[in-house]
Amino acid sequence: MEKKPSEIITEFLNFLETAKNEYESAYADVGLEDRKEQTFLHDLEFAQNKNERNKVATRFQQSRRTRRKSEGQGATI
Image (cartoon, rainbow, N blue to C red; front, side):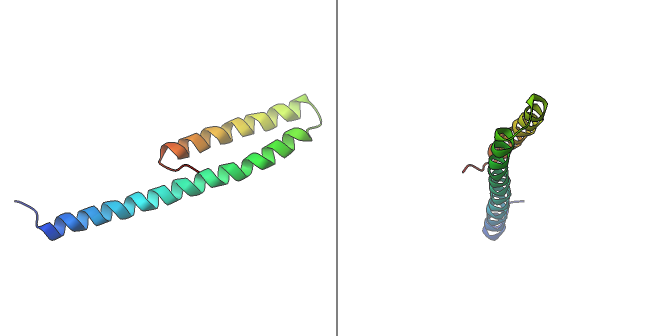
């Protein structure tokens, strides 16, 4: 059975709304990770020793991976 034009349009509008919501969510995730970057840089700058710097660097690395994952979902800043 062939779909009515109104059904096709409704499906397309639903698709656009879903895409918009996913983009906004990914965009917010990327922004959050960008704000964390400043904290990591500050923590690296004032780390008391090598072990503390390594811990911050590991958290920073994980944050960057999360950001790239969010970018892959369609959000770039």
